[in-house]
Length: 307
Image (cartoon, rainbow, N blue to C red):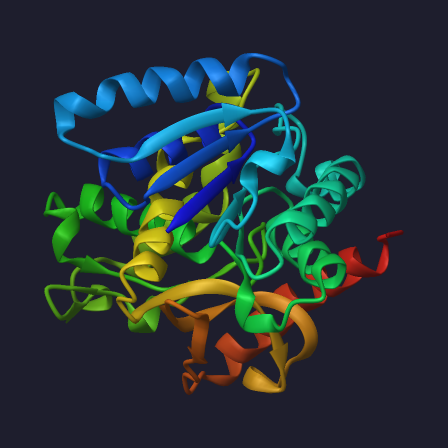
């Protein structure tokens, strides 16, 4: 595959480096508006490839013509959060950026799958889908994988167990109203309700919802990029290798989960053609209500767009 990563900041560069390390592309293009930055970072990655034995040819550019005939485009561009900001505070600025990026993607790579990483994630995924005119299976947002990874990390920490044994699923919008599904969360197949008291679980759920801002408050001038890039590349690998992974992802719903006309995180089967199936879980009334609230938050923000 030829993969383009739009945005050579911390998230984009980390995504690109992981793609090179995992040899997930024939050619990787790192593109950014800042002259010299994508060129320098891509050259640095390319020069590291003999050490890991990766034959990915990484190149940097400020010209979208370089991205022509990309199979997959990962959009990370946009401003990052600062302390005191919500993901929604980024909406107007990043919507304009994502609109321009998507127009250029469609111009040079009309058949590319689009994987959205920019915040506010669900709204930016909607912008890319609307501007591109792609069907819903070809525009997917990365959020649930990251939120689930944070949830799993905190559970493993609380129990002093391997993160590899923790399985979890977080649905809903990538924001304060995300829906960690405690009922579907297990450690080596054991429900966490058998291992942790409710108060501890509730605190972990709260920390998961605040996972992004916790890091922003530490960094002061930036936001998370190691976990977001790892989550993104898990999805990239599922697409490139047609792995049919079941991963929580943001997609356009057309009646699934009794939701229609909104993009929100749900479990999907992710493969070479993008979203190949939406997995329908049987939710309790409480879980369904929480998911609908999260979806309504996204819908309200979509309604504020002027694109």
